[in-house]
Length: 269
Length: 166
Image 1: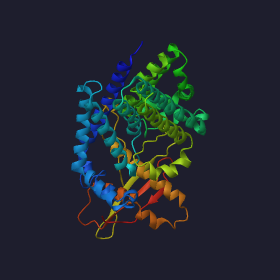
Image 2: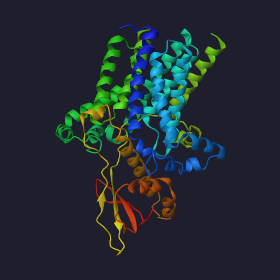
Image 3: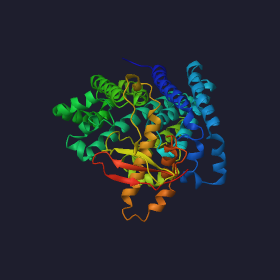
Image 4: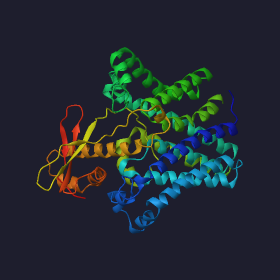
């Protein structure tokens, strides 16, 4: 399967847009939490020392954009920018505008949510959006190639970091990490799955090490040839689908799989 | 290569190198990036690497006659549904509450002496938890509400608040 730069960017965009739409509609569906009394209300969040210790001009600025009404407006604008990505012709100013707004709002989402920790999916999406924004500003062959390399290396880094941190963890090294995670009702609230892996310790051990090997060895997809590439990509899709269904972290699927076209493009070179 | 191409390539290279440093020396860098990287452009993904502890959050009320109600457990885990793989907005609030509980427990464990107890009450996370619990109904004669955090594994009490009234 050979992808042209335009096809690669189109596929990345498609997954990115699905992620942003799901995330934005989820945020709108819990709008009551942004109103007074909600856990995400600005009246509450602004009391975080991170904000109270900032300069007055900074606080005045965020006091305008972070209250519920302006915030929901920004989330709605995020949805409109996604539509903009679909309808705008390649290399048009609308594309630059849409990426810029998506990058700014994505950054503000992280800032507003600092007290509870920025969402991992949103942090990763900013890497992709930021790169695509730079590419839309100067859509030359060199910049396109640099952007696709950047996205491919960032996804390799994300898997490698996860794999190395598992190797640093005693429970994963002893082969219990996966079993602990998958038998925890807190993380996977399906009794049948908890019990299944409780009974099949050998299988848990095998998956434990497959996950570590997959994550630590992931960067080899860039130079190991098409067979290895596709084995890793299929394994990645299985991993993220399992996380989506078992752990209910579906947004991880869309944003991580969004980087796979960049891997295919770089690996085929 | 034009000057603009060089600038863009340099921006991407700097971002990637910063992320590599952040990924592998996270603890030391986090000290600086917490205040500098306000938009969280740097990331280190360690999904499920650390053994997470699970806690139960419960609350009780003090009534006008000075009696206290039974502890009420706060449900923070929605029943599993297949569509949660795609659509699961309720997870946002559960995750926020679990995150502030983890932070509170972390601070309590660091402060074994108990001298920092007053400081804990002044912290945002303490205030956010009490604010969150306001959504659960209380009788009109309620004088105050108290919450506690229990370690799920051994049912040990990790933290208990004073009675407070928002």
